[in-house]
Length: 434
Image (tube, rainbow, N blue to C red):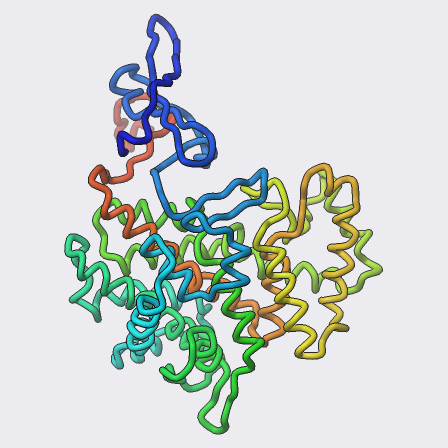
């Protein structure tokens, strides 16, 4: 960790007959951090922090979240400004390289991404090795992990140029992989990428075009898709990002590390939250049933949970949700489905929850998942594609974190400790004597 984080402050820890002076590190934003790296060597003890909710696993310059303020910054830029004024590939550049690009830098970056969207032709056979009813996330985990078998010239993590090539390939090819996973899932032919379309429009075209007729991407739909990508691009040290970092710490190739992140994202408590939210809205079915489900959510003995409200980090309104709500309104108006029953339930549920004392006191505000599922459903995606789209968007965040970690001169393989509560040493007993 750079010495610039250090100041004169220390924390004193006393236990038994020992007293340790632990250095304190000061970030540019957020709470001070107690440096416990020498706690075991000097004190012979570990810390215990299930879920790592009070542990900083790394230092980073990429993304900052202030959960109490409801603030999300990428390289210092607020997410609402980026979603309103920027677009996904510009945000990708920002996350990867640290600053907003000049016009020439952006043109060069977009050109490099656009020219790498095609997949190795033999990868088609890899897709066809899956069962037709395979979940698109299962396909994505396998295909992304297999990229190391097709792109041997970008797996050496110690070569800066190969790291750069792997970066561009992952960002460029992930929409194609996700779209082809979807096409394979529904039994339609693969649609090749088009270099005349922007990133979001190209993805939509690969998902919904068919060879038999022309498909024109609506710019409002493409803009909404781009915003979804932008709002999910990175989110600090969440479970999947931490998985990518842990896998990367072993020296694994970048494609294996990103595949590990996709596998982690697949969990319903992480990337599957927007699917769970939409399914909940459909289960409620009608606005007049909302009070029943709100009472169930308040009942501690009822396992039912209102999905799409509250967030592990944000104790205020999710800053991404405001922008996503605007996109939802635009898309639904465009498609003329403002009277959709699911949408009516969502709007009424949101209005009630924002006024209900129980939700207000617990700060259970609608989060990004509450609106993103509604948008994706309106566009025409089945719920099985919600998490693959999340993975597509989050790839740039994973790659940015991976690049930052690989370049860290103090990189060490991740090795968490444990609080062992099992049996102590005992002698083996022969089977006839048990």
